[in-house]
Length: 227
Image (tube, rainbow, N blue to C red; front, side, top):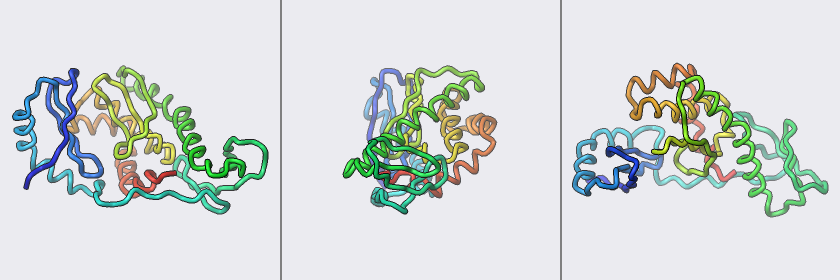
């Protein structure tokens, strides 16, 4: 069986590594000087590992991206792991407010979804990014910068420049799940690969690691809804 893969090269990389995204896409990360032959040999050597990862229950393929919900009275949205009702507010303000329910101004009209997305992103920056710095201090690691990003098939990533990227959709998940994703990315600064040592680091930081991984397996695609 041939393995299809894409290649991302960087001058910062010293060796070839492989990741399998949740849509089963295989991505090879390689130094700029790596030849096509060397990359192909690495993929061939890791083929059984790749087959195992592409069959993992957390992966999926040929599934449409969830369409999201209509922002109307009586519908609900996730925020930090809980569902809150939507109330369309008939007032003059154009700002979304949260008061144990989502108050969405009727004046936003067809722009309600984009405004809700921006609300989520702003909350993610406010609530999630400070937790990266706190966990880094506990672990005794330094990172470049932490950012909230729009990533379809990754909850987070640790870049070759030691930057931490986190998916804005995590603001919909419980805080213990957010902490797990943060710990997962920071642990890569101590252990690049998913070795037993790596998982021990993550679990020491977030004892609820197994529960968090299970929550993402069960609810991950709901988080990926448009809103």
